Each structure stands twice: as C-alpha cells, then as structure tokens.
Image (cartoon, rainbow, N blue to C red; front, side, top):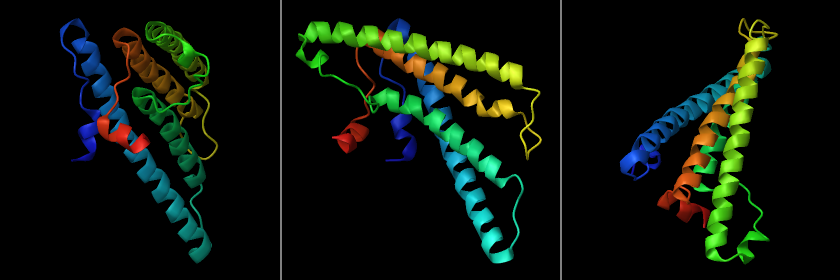
Length: 181
C-alpha cells in the first residue's frame, strides 16, 4: 500500500461527487505540500546545525525559512486531522443523547465549525493582503506568507466540515482508524 492511498476520493455519487473530488484533490495537494514542508524544514535545520557547530558559520535566512515551514506544516495538517476525526472533542453531554439527536448535533456543530473556519479564511486573506508589502527580516519575501496558511487551513478544514455536515459522518480511513484505536 503506497502513501497516497489515504487520499483517495470519498466514495459518493450523485450531486455531491464534485465536492468529494474537490476535497480529495485538496487532500492530495496538501499531503504532498506537507511532505515538502517537512523535508525543507528538517534539511535546512540540519544544514544550519552542521554549519554552526562544525564550520562556525550559518545561513542568515535558515531560521526564518524553518519557522515558515513549521507554521505551514501545522496549519496544512489540521484539515487532514479533521477529515478522520482525529481532533479533540468533548462528548460528555452528547454521548447521553439518543442516536438521532447525536447525529443532528454533530451536523450542526460541523456547520458551525465550517462557518468559523470560513471566517478565519476570510480574515486571514484580508490580513495577508494588508501585510503583503511587509518583508521578512532575513528573506526577500512577504511576511504575509506566515498568514496565508491560516486561510488555506480555514478553507480546506471548512470543506471537510461541510462534507461531514452533509453526509453525517467523517471520512475515516480504515487504516488510520485502526492506528488510532
């Protein structure tokens, strides 16, 4: 089984099929971006450590690039956790509800969460736009690149929560579910 197996489209036909394919495409893109972010972060930090301690030298922009990759990796991974329900939930009250009421509550909470994430995406886009002309301290790139992943996370996470609200269940990968159990 290869690493991309987890990012297969959700099984759905009919009018929700385009949404399922959009979410799956987003998952694949984010999954590969996450791998690239982690590779760059680990590589640049490793090179920086070798340069500092063996050659008494350093790369000026290494810390800022590693920090940027860290921020991106955190926020791009969050929707993948939402996808399978790997996020934290407090169910003290809800588990006492009848099954039908639990389902309705879960859908409403998913819609509320999606609305909040869309607000995060919108506000982060506004902030990034307003800060686009500000440069990072050690790299000739916009400081807004630290805000952009919030928008990506908000939009991607909202898609997963909208899916959960429409379908009534999370898209749980059986392999991932067995690892979490």
